[in-house]
Length: 218
Image (cartoon, rainbow, N blue to C red; front, side, top):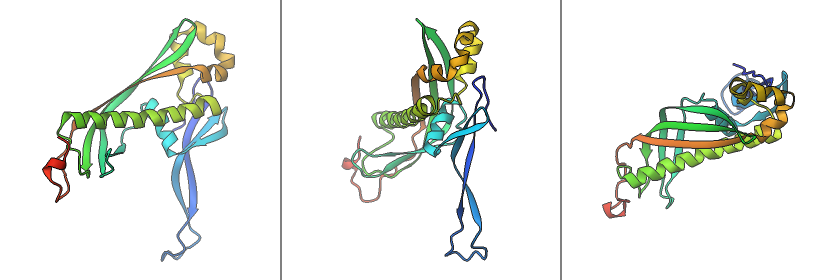
């Protein structure tokens, strides 16, 4: 579904197609296979650019539209990965104008479960390990969001996050003063990210066979 706001910006799935593998047994070797490549950005009903899947994920975090995602964290010693799946949570956006400065406070609060721990050295039962994984997930989310914000605020100047709608509702007088130049104002809006991740189910200890207990982080 396309999102359209006071800023006349919208977002749609971006579909690309590739040729079917000619080495396959498919009789129709000219068949085109569609796949989701990210999102397409529109301003005033005109396509102005695209986001890849990672950049789109950053947008979906802020729009509170990401419901299923899996994240892998590498162990500091490179011995393997911890894979976590989002269980539930939400994102809340709050527009604020203080001393003439416009900003949005984005509060992200999400619960995760550990799906797999293939590391040699990390025991997810330990609170310090759980805290480290939570911080790593927070860092990944922050990275994706900042990447997306840089593109939509500075390159495309497209308010697909509906910041304009939020300021319009809360600050109608101030909004009217900047509405005509919202694209420029939108690029100046600061986004304060407050991200909190909670590991609710640490999973079973999955230390690989043959790894001594004294080599597992306690």
